[in-house]
Image: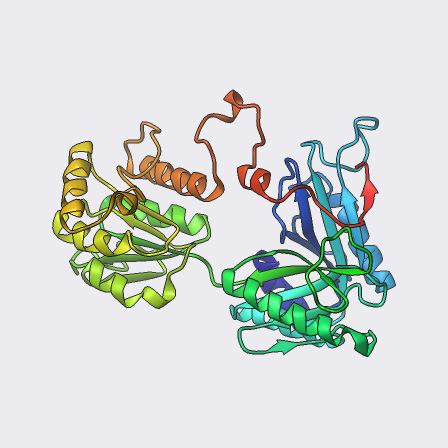
Length: 394
């Protein structure tokens, strides 16, 4: 729901009822990841998407029905060879979609969750998508130090379950993870094939991942623009004030004048495994102190610009300052994929393509030359969509 949070908050603030359809399970070549959402308000306005068009019409109708009935529903969509015109995914994947009606002021967890989303406060929404009928649709909103809502209407025997889901959701929030969680009524982790279990879908909403671009050169402006397009919070850092200006980088969220290694040292509490570092200075006096630190940090991607000769010289210098083969092996240098890029914009596409491939496990080969799954990260995930969703052309 993160990409439609602003509109949801507007509907919620105006007291308008709506329904949110969320992708809660994916297998095969389904077009959207878990957490993708489509919302429909009481007047019929729709925002967002769950499939890129394949099943939007059917999900829209489910949302309207949920608004009218006030009841949530879990639905499965897939492709049918027997009926190619059935409601389903022509790409051959399977989506589980949970549709939940929202009436502002009636659910403290959803009220709090939507407010947190709109303000950018990290929050995990844990919603019951399958289990005992009285629990389905129950929501708990969990932040780092508090939670809102309860698994009600429900018997007091679910207190252990509530404590467990708050703890598990907080751990998922800390890791920035979204996914299913299956627990027994006593709060113990379970296999979803066991009887008497409760399936939650936990959505973690954390600040946008960071991209830090070191080196205020002409290529950096294009990298900043494509970084913003990919959803990163982008900072440009350079020690030279004449180059590191907001006028030169109007698309950056922040422009910092500082030595790269010193700025990185000041950001240790704000970088994580999603952070991307693009080192574009190709100047040893900046690069080496920066990379000496960066290659020892648990960031997601580190790339450095430069020729093959610059890379060989950089490699030698990094070994001289004590970095190991494993640490140097994390460096993507020269930065980017071999697209034959020449212009700043083409180079930015090359860099972005490598970042996406590294994050998602892509082969970097043309899709037309392969036979395997298109979505590599989903292929690595733990199996197909689960749950007792009713099937549409499954």
